[in-house]
Image (cartoon, rainbow, N blue to C red):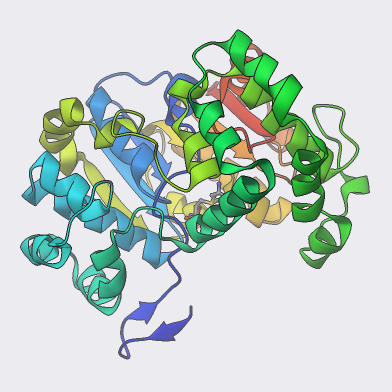
Length: 370
Ligand SMILES: C[S@@+](CC[C@H](N)C(=O)[O-])C[C@H]1O[C@@H](n2cnc3c(N)ncnc32)[C@H](O)[C@@H]1O
């Protein structure tokens, strides 16, 4: 917690105003069907909102950080009260100088905590919240470094390429130079990572890399060569700090999906809690799908075991799980692997096609119980 605006309401740091996990991977991992009950990690709210297109019965959006709950509340209240053009204007997807007016029209639908949070952050509302969380500000800085190193024209050229053949050719001939490799060495060098308690020698990288920088370089190179740039809004977000066009955006931001999102908006319940303790209070066998992001990297092995014990208990028979690692390897504890079983074939495919290339693992699991 950073500070308090009064004795009751803690002001926490807003980290994400977007999800950086590819929602297509979540949908495929949990094999989403209409009428299901899901548990998602809220983060920037995008992936939870995308799920509304599959008409779920209920989504519990859980996040330990109250600021992420405020982001979700903000987006939900905006969807309930605004038309599509107003919605994307308020969020900051398109230019607008009336954001505070639009905000005043959604306030009555915010919780007291969210109202206080956003009034204390009205400068951010005025700017448009998208791309203005702490993580996104870091991404924008990294994007500036990339544009400086590679040159703005080269970056623009990359986004104009039409086929994978062109992408690979461009990558090999013009992109994959010493400066490109240097970015990874600077960002993921031993000193910087050691400060965070990470020593590469302890880790085994799935791609055979020896260091974190090599592993991230491999993943970034792969996405530049193997995934069509035109369909990858994560690349434009990472490389230019924005979405390149109104068409290349998460599905919940698109005009054609807005009515369906609006119709289903009341299906989301937003909860501020540590997932493992929230699950503890839920009944047995009540959830069809879990999207757990990479939350276990922030937990001890013991807490990871507690989390998955609760997942196994609250999952319906046949439930599915999407689970990621960013840097630190975490796996389902051995003693639970007979109940929570990795679907190797789907997992390999998810990792190969994930548009947000930063994750070392994107995996799908089935819950096998009676
Ligand atoms: C795990 S982060 C992942 C985002 C990003 N991809 C990354 O790797 O940094 C996503 C969200 O998980 C939330 N989170 C972390 N641990 C959690 C927990 N135990 N229960 C609920 N939410 C948690 C964070 O507050 C954050 O909003």
